[in-house]
Image 1 (cartoon, one colour):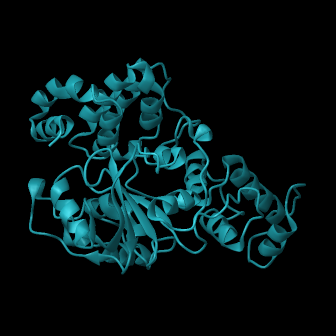
Image 2: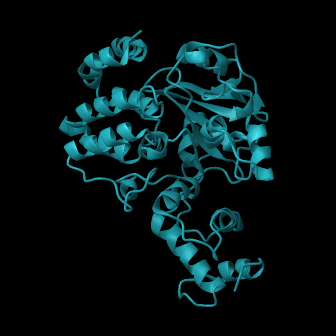
Image 3: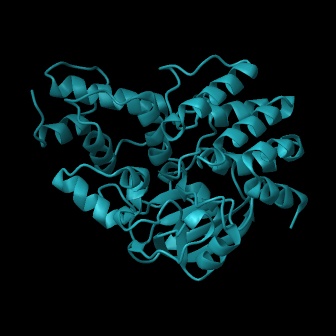
Length: 367
């Protein structure tokens, strides 16, 4: 194990009162430690420590911007009140005011400055899926055997097929189901979910600072292991085949745009707007940048399917997610939705395109 790996293993297994003694030693590893802490912030057992390590790394001027970006993008809904207070304190110590409506959960404080991406092959989805900071050697061995496992799956009612059925029936989810619900897009049967043939980037696999890329070859499977550390059973499984493994995240083959979006803490998210950057890693065809192209019907379906033009405007965080999925600017997405809303509500917008008007007129929206 490298020195950092050894320190992380000690911190992971230490009692909370002793863990803090390893903060400075881990923070000294800079970028590599940031990669690890992004995973740890998503785990309730490690989140408080991860925030303190990130705060200490951010005190080093070369890393401040990267740390602020990570902390501002943390999903506060996954944190307890005292850890959320730690998060706000860390941002304040780095000279950033409390997060507000201008920087909602899941949105990056510098998302507008994120390097642009190149969209991938039409019809193919591209995803980032985080696994778990626990039992990484086991998870890597399983991935090499074609089973990409995500954590937070140990109770039978957390089977994503069971959760999807409950949601469609309108049933109230249990607390454990609510915890697993964020992984629903692993289901090929879920609207907006993964499809066979999609490509998945797994950060920090096989180890921190590395990444591996897989192709989905079959539908989601619920297959818990015997209980492991902390009774985790890693029941959520994607059948996959490896396309590129053990890639250095900081190597020249990883674009600045792809490197930046791997800093998002969320467990599972679509990055089809950066699919061309992923294709570069796996030797596929890299499409040309189509940012100036007219919108496609598939994009209209995604945008207005999730955010109907006769409903509430997408939040900044929701627009940020669509930036990753479309590979378009935040302004382009916001304007497109606003133009569609104006047309549906009987108003007008000078920038509304004829293809958008025609597409909307073929759908049933309130007027």
